Image (tube, rainbow, N blue to C red; front, side):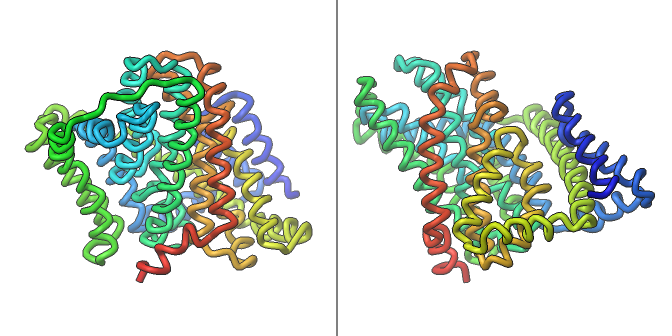
Length: 428
């Protein structure tokens, strides 16, 4: 191990001990690395500018961030939740099923687990409280269902992964559809079992007139995924352009149909989006400076050699990679894992003959499980914050749901056709 690498590992470790923002820790580590190794620190800026901000696909990220914020503010969440309630709310444990179905629908608009948990999640938790569900279960199912956001297209993490791996964004989006639906189905089966065990109430059965009324009101929101994904897969727009179309359409329905946004709210939305994208830009820049050092030190090749010395069986390699990323997800945020650690294993993935689209969907789901896993799962903190529920109550209810998500992860890991069937059928 070189002195520079030893220094960067030490600084990175201190980042965790001192609870510093991970982006600043990576920047500090990269700075000390260049100082110790005697390299020109301007190389970092050059690499970031040439390899990151010049990529066209990266423009999709702020557009999808803005779309998510518009959908949360513009009464779209209300309409989606009401439609889901009319569809499955009469089942035993109905409001839990509504929670999951609403997350699936909302995921087709935003591509963000955080947007789901912080926007739609508030409404879901309040509704479950009103129906007499305990706060721990309500928050846990809200956090677990929010993981569908980046699996079902569109997906911000998949955009990052496509940028790093060169995999097709359209194929990744198609590959995430069946796994996203599978997660929803698995969670609804779990809710049905728990509802019977705990005697959760049935929701009110809606009359046909009420059902059509809720459906009619939700149609402008429900066709958002159709416009977005239809544009991509018919070749009318790229994934980046689809983000712009989704943002514009979200503004249209929020301004003129739902009348929930005025010019003042639009200004606040733009400011909030700029702040969020500023944070993402710092994370991206620091991660790419860190990744540059990883490449210089030939760490991916060393990791590939180490794991291939253990086994050359690709199924066992997938198991090892899943375990490593699940552990990382317990302590590190998704963006950092995607931008720093995925490039370390991509050469191994290609060498083992693992399909990049299959691996991408698998690793995004892996990262989403990390968002619900103690001790630092971000979704746990979000639902705790918006509901005022103590974290320990949420964690107790979340653990069985994590097991459900792990079962789905194992299925898509070892049954790649679940991911690849749609890209192979419609990808061209």
